[in-house]
Image (cartoon, rainbow, N blue to C red; front, side, top):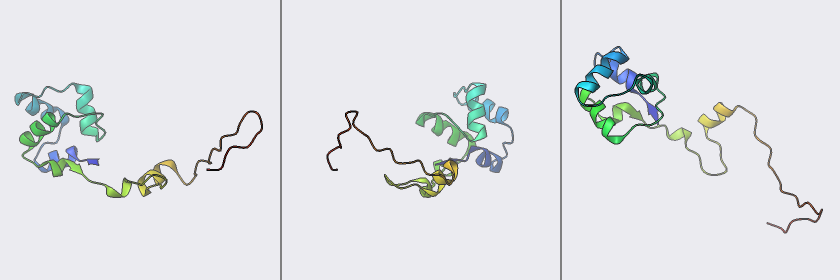
Length: 109
């Protein structure tokens, strides 16, 4: 998911994090400066569903305006997705094969 608070707020005429923080506090959601910075910068650590409700009310938006799905970043086990591959780079980690300490081979898989 992509967090889209800053653009959504700008579309509603809110240009500063402090302005949004004050509006949220007026609706009963008091957010620390650190957490507000995370929300505004696009990298929230965590967010309660109740807080999302307040943000949507204050901005007059829908949840789909704040959270944008990124299905291309989802991969099946054993596959790398496009987004993660770009983050990791072109290198692929070597496969680790367990070995017994006594030198005997492991049973077939």
